[in-house]
Image: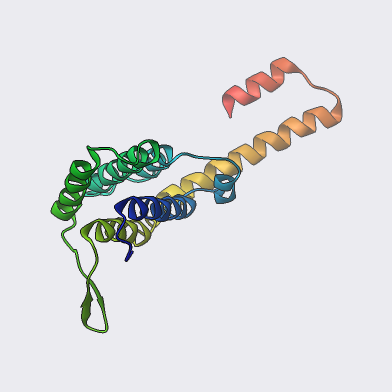
Length: 178
C-alpha cells in the first residue's frame, strides 16, 4: 500500500476485494468449492454477494465495489485515462462519506497512507468483517421437513421401480398428493 503509483494501488486493491468477495460468498453458499471451478468476473461477484442477504445500511458497500471495478477497468484498458483522477476522487469521497473511518493504527501510532489505499483497505475490512447471519431455527426446521418429504418420495419411486410395477398414473397421483 506504500506505492506511489495509483494504478498499482487500484490493481492490487481490486485483487484483494476479489478475494474478500469470494470468501464472503463462500461462507454463505452450500458448495463454496464450486466458486473456484471457473472464472467469475468481479461485477458478477458483487451482484451475487449483494443478493445473499439484505442487511440494512450495506447498500453503499455494493455501490463502492462497483465504483472500484469501474476504476480498475479504466486502468486496465487505458493507463493514461484523463478521467481517472476524477473517478478516484469521487470513489474516495463516496467511501469516506459512508464509512468515514480513514485511519490505520499500529501500536497506538497512526500510519500514513494515501487516501486511495485507505479506501481499498476500508472496503476489504467491511467485507471480511461481515459474518454470515445465523440461520433462523424456523428456516432450518422447514429445510429438514422438505428434505424428509423428498427422501420419502424418492424411496417410494425407487420401490415402484424395484417391484417392476411402475404405473405412471399411480406414481403421478402419489406425487400430486405428496
